[in-house]
Image (cartoon, rainbow, N blue to C red; front, side, top):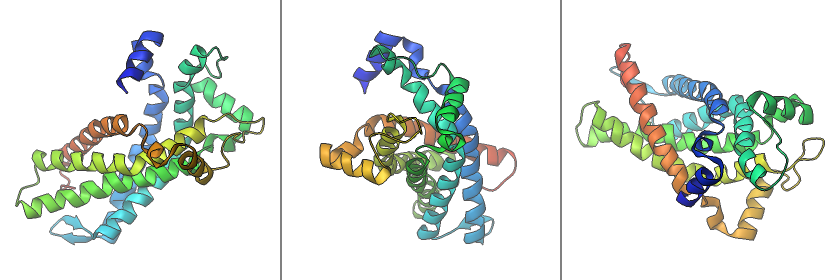
Amino acid sequence: MVATAFGIVREEGTMKLWQGVTPALYRHVVYSGVRICSYDFLRRKLGSDNNGIITLPLWKSALCGVSAGAVAQWLASPADLVKVQIQMEGKRRLMGEPARVHGAAHALKEIVRRGGVAGLWKGSIPNVQRAALVNLGDLTTYDTIKHMIMIKLNMPDCHTVHVLSSICAGFVAAIMGTPADVVKTRIMNQPTDEKGRGLLYKGSVDCLRQTVNKEGFGALYKGFLPCWIRMAPWSLTFWLSFEQIRSMIGASGY
């Protein structure tokens, strides 16, 4: 991971580490908003209200997390596809290959031109599968661990509890999401024919099978460390901000 980061800085410049940040922000406006609102809606429908605190069993929390993540990612898949293609341009240029896209808007136009509007959802199935697993880890773990810490350790709803819960949530999300992330990235970045169909993999199951057969099960966890390093601060920042905003507007703790 460190060697890759230094290689990007040395060959392409420091700012290339943030290549694709614009469509990434577009994605999170949709993805983060939909996933947390969907999860909150579902947990209120399926949970029990105990003096203003919503509680629900683990299996219901898992169902809410998977559903919220899947719906949010499906809606955000076009922005995710644009982000991945932009991030791969630096490598293509270094390999002497012609640039495919020159920015977010151009990438969007090229995707529609090659595969039609449906092409914007290329790789959406592994995308949705990954998001379902990540949110099973993130949303479900945070919700469950937070209440467990408060009950077992007799702690109030405070920043310490939020920090501990978000650390656990980020770690479990990385464990759950890395295999699906590997499959998703390979499918979304594979070359396509004139009709937008992938030339290397027929789908997520085929990609999973080929990866394990050719590289072993451990290949599914390639990039686990950078994935966790990315998810840990993201989870910490999101949950602390979310809890603080709820407190500021007078809403009950999560």
